[in-house]
Image (tube, rainbow, N blue to C red; front, side):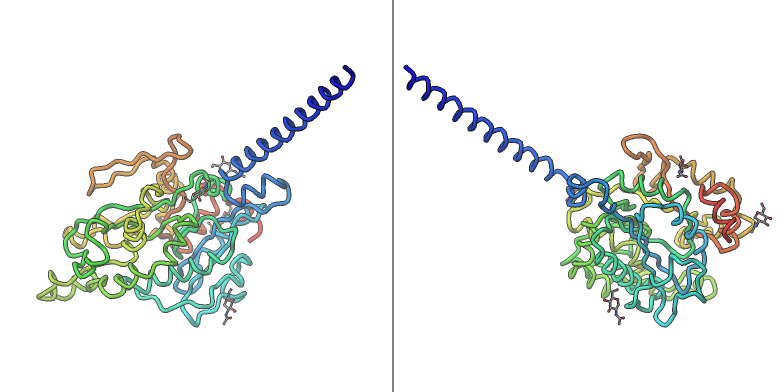
Length: 370
Ligand SMILES: *[C@@H]1O[C@H](CO)[C@@H](O)[C@H](O)[C@H]1NC(C)=O
Ligand SMILES: *[C@@H]1O[C@H](CO)[C@@H](O)[C@H](O)[C@H]1NC(C)=O
Ligand SMILES: *[C@@H]1O[C@H](CO)[C@@H](O)[C@H](O)[C@H]1NC(C)=O
Ligand SMILES: *[C@@H]1O[C@H](CO)[C@@H](O)[C@H](O)[C@H]1NC(C)=O
């Protein structure tokens, strides 16, 4: 009897141990499953919350020489206390960004050392973009990559911009099927079928995954180098007669097609939000010829750059895409939102005037320091 109860007891303990083991095992499995839902960075956060570095936004400046609006960006970056950004500048080879050419410490030592000569409308522009992306990819914490021009300003403070961009796991790429005759060169056909031909803005925000795709691309980029060339600039057309065979020349603007077409080509369009976060005003009035119209964005000078202008850009909450009869209502985190976080083109006096007002949400400190 005693023996039996002993064995029963033993049986009982053994069962309890097994149960505990199973429980432990399933906890571990659940933990693994939960963790696999998160990126490596979030996994680390899961393990040790307070010390881990936050993912960064890489700001990629494409400049001719200096960054004329550096003091506006200086005020913008100063608004971040958590080291959530990194800066890369592509200026022409030979130009040196140093204490003599920028007053903002954020830009010192941020110039990439393998820049190339960029010619407007040539494939060298997309090559410069790829070089910037390659450099920024080396930093493992860079999770989003923004192209910024030297005439571009932020419309909000850093936290707002960061949260907006990070709230979705998509790239922001304005992209539409480009049916305009003469821009697609059928010689690309074997590699890039016309169905994958896209157009959009150069000023995109990319996820790390899409940046890796661009940097690794060795099929679409060579097609652009060989078969995507701009026709002579429209300004020159005004003075000289159109070349007799102009209609046969292909008029392709590489940087307005490359990222869009590559993402279509790789079947990644499901991972983009199809709009640009950078506002440009197109000059629709200066030319009656639809072929020439809208070639260059307006540049805002000192007299044009009022807080009202900025407020009117900030108020935009939908975009109409003429060629597709498509109206995009802007959303963020599933709620209606502002469409634009950045705007161009601004001269230096215009941007400094805006910095002096409160409309960009980054002004007060900046003026007191300067
Ligand atoms: C250029 O920069 C890269 C990375 O920042 C560095 O590894 C390399 O040594 C630099 N090259 C030159 C020639 O300074
Ligand atoms: C940043 O801007 C947003 C939107 O304008 C505002 O609600 C928020 O208070 C600002 N945050 C900081 C830290 O200034
Ligand atoms: C974001 O997307 C990438 C690639 O599509 C994926 O690997 C990653 O797990 C996603 N992260 C989150 C937080 O959804
Ligand atoms: C900035 O504002 C101050 C005072 O509000 C004014 O004295 C100064 O002229 C302004 N600067 C510019 C560039 O508008």
